[in-house]
Length: 184
Image: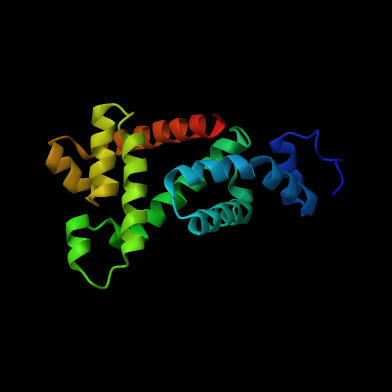
């Protein structure tokens, strides 16, 4: 692979990628893959599923490159895609978040899946604990207990707009925490 594009920043590479320059896509992938992989690996214990999410993240980003706003850092846009895919992953796999005592009583659940789910839950909980209490609370209700926004508002006796704002801010803080840990 030639190094002719190494000197370009992400915005210039995106522009070239939108002009169907394959090497620009490759450069963006090479530049961000390790950090994206580290980010996802902090949340997804199963390495093959984590790798799938890495590939899906770049696939989704590259498919939607025309929607990227160059006023913002490419990495910020990319991490929002990664974060949303991880959230979708947890929603689709919420079966794995059955309480351990329930899982032990259900013969059809694979013990390895239960162990992986518990490790993932513990890893996520450690990260959530670092949030402000009001942010951690809405994250737990929304993504761990699968409450709808309206249910969260009723549970916490706060306006729906406040729920949305707290979730948005909590997700932004989570992204920063995970990104920071990915660099360490």
